[in-house]
Length: 294
Image (cartoon, rainbow, N blue to C red):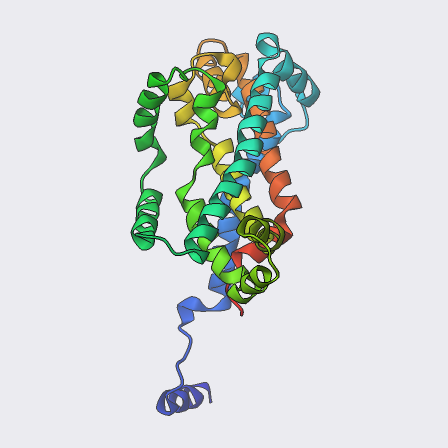
């Protein structure tokens, strides 16, 4: 009967679903992807609860050698409490930088979408070209510029470059096209509102989901930023968490007592990103579907 129905479907021109794309195969691929994503996090959580002896013996699944509280105390006591300074630096770089950077990106994307000026599309083409340039390629030119202005080994040498994100500008234009109708802007202008007032009181409120989406992308990028601080900074008091844990991990080959604090520090380092995505998930999901339905 199934062979007859399949033949009839083929004769009728109805496409049949390949067996390789069946539900069991799809579920298997999803489960493998979830395991691939969560197993490193699970290992990190288990390893953060163990002392140094348990880490070297690979005895992570046992209930013995629990040392979570002690590892936490050692983390914030190591090298005079340097980890707390690194954590504060990362929050300052990432949260403030992502907030200012997302506002700049959304404003630039809005200008590209709503205003007409000479060579607009050519300039936007440069923005798209800049998206494809790896950040590591820009590290040396940025270092030379910072060196020429005397900003090397300062807070500003890391903070200023992260404020400008070409991909955020591209997303800003897409969100502006999907969320801000031209008719609303015309109505605001007829009512006598200036361009800046229209943007702040009307357009920016409509661009809220897009702003949150760009903010999360910026936050993730800046929080995980490693190469630029490594090039710019030599003062450990200015290090972000990523670079600080790297230096401790390098020292762990000589001083094994660094291993538990590095693992505990890595666990705490992912908490702000998880918290940000959990709290802003509703706005982020709506932002990703911008323009899908009009």
